[in-house]
Length: 381
Length: 132
Image (cartoon, rainbow over all chains, first blue to last red):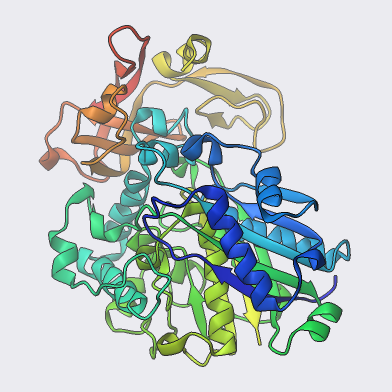
């Protein structure tokens, strides 16, 4: 396997972008990444695009062809789908492609246009087991709420500790001009917000956002030739688990996260102690708490207290989601996994402005559905 | 949903029919084509419909699709139920007050309407649970 670097990044602003469609956002992100890498469009040999459901959100499938067409590129173009982990999986597929020696330069991206339908919750529920969960009334907030309920019952995690995740991520996003929300909130705001599925409230949940994000990946030889500040992909992990939450051995652990992290740490010859900053999949506040346990930053059951003590803030022991996370940066499903990698790259280059943590090693963690897929990447300067 | 899609799940959703692995004797619900032990030789197995609540939530905001009635009747209780025979499933808990809900509570299956597609659409039936 060859070494692979990220040599360019680009993303749209995330938010309610009613004036933008799927392909215009993807083209903006892709073009920004190509410019950032200082290469020409003709240098791009292959595209990988993560999107959960052009079909259900916008009545548009065949996005591999669509996005290559709109980019003005006639190169192999692969649409990658793994629900909310579509972007992270697109990155991994692009990484495997370059590492294998098949191509030298790839653009990997993610995009989702979520506001062209009035049925977002129903579309998202298709990432669950439609016949065994969704048909009985399971929604995504409902599935994560059931994880939260058991985590609270077993470990004494509180609603205020979950609110602290949301407050922290909103505070981080104030310094991120690409974020959906640049607005601080208080624990009181979270606690008083509308209940969606007990114990989760609307301010425990990531928003419905439009947006796109893209990276340029290059082989070691090309990266050294083209780029002064390559960020190396040191480890890549991908695991699956049962699609239904009810079939899991333990509902308070995402076994796919544990397995994907083990692969990535192993490949990078690192442990959780070596990670300086992480972007984790906080689609709901409980998901961030479970993630920092499953990734090994804190022992099982201790994440709530750890977070409330401020250890996951920028400047804390292990800053989590300095970008604002899915919660405040926004969660355009297919784009999220790629946007996490962009934050990792900006952190390692020292280009994250007031969010800079001075990190040498960064981790990203992207989850599909309620944990049926997990993708973990480790990046180094 | 096309009618055959509902029809072919009648045994599973009306009567909790799953599968039993003839080799390792593991019971599955919903039915599977292949056991986790690798065996393809499975037979039908009907579960008794008794179990306990593993975790639960009260859904207060649901899908915005006005054609699907279960999503309209909010709030409703959604739970993961572990059947006495081993497997777990996701189902609504009905006929209970929120104060009766508890992790570990014993529940039993009842037969109820799951989905209704408008006035002329097919009605889909299946399992829900109540406090035993």
